[in-house]
Length: 454
Image (cartoon, rainbow, N blue to C red; front, side):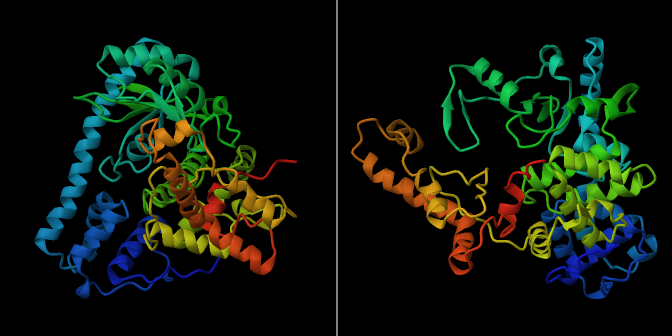
């Protein structure tokens, strides 16, 4: 094993206790690289608040209860322990209700001949963690085959599921608004360009995501959805058969979802826990060479490697060396891994948002040898947008005299938004004259498209 030696930054005793407990859970406690904190000085209210911030509060109760020899010496205040236990119980009860409602959906799909494959938390909580109170789920995700969408929609409608309110407009990947005539047109756009549609039930699952793929059609990835079904395993949900991703596909989906779609910002430590538990539970089944080949074929190798490295650093999980290198080159450098750990542990400052401007979701990567003026020109071309879009973005009347003023506002917000991402890059270019620095910052690295396959 050739791990990158990067210290976890500025851990407080309460944070150190949580990391140590998670390492004991996922690596068997056979590590000595993180000093075990003295429990007598621990502020347990801070432990609980940190677990909430890291999105692992339900896990905390089980981490304590599973080690009774230690929990008696931890002297946890009664009121804090009640809060810790309540987080677990709440998660258990909510998930139990959702799985009961999910059973009704699976049964309805079965009568219509629709296969359902459980994704993310719906797969992980009962079948990998093997405890539905251990992992919180913000939604329930189901994958169906694209040709079954209309039938699945009809079945969901029969049992009371509806679309949430959908405004008659969509946004493309560059933040440009496209007007559509009606709800049906919006839904059709989603079916063509997106990967899932949301449903809700006032007395059932409030956020049900019905997937027909795991990446958007406009994404830079090449994911063989048919292959997901061919490799899928089977599990039982309250007497009904459901499909689940193979261990390799499950790892790839977790890494793609958190690193690419959410940029390591939304779920704290939870995705790393997901990666760790998959490796722990399927250590004898994972084909690491096949995993790396598939990651390379999909174009998601960088996200797999990053999540494995960060998980290994945080939890000391035993991972073979194979997924960490490609064609002899280091996929993740020290800077990117360090920034990733800091982001996951909440060491970053939130970026400001600017009215009328979306933070760029697509990263521009420049060609080697491209001049600095050409690169700056790429952004200048985006300063002028049609009069109608200025009116729509800033809620102006079409005859307003302020349109010219808001064109300047548009320029200012564009500069402020892109400067967050590209400012330091251009400063580096001015000083050193180097190009193609997609690894200069974590955001550039995460959002840059995968390299073209030769």
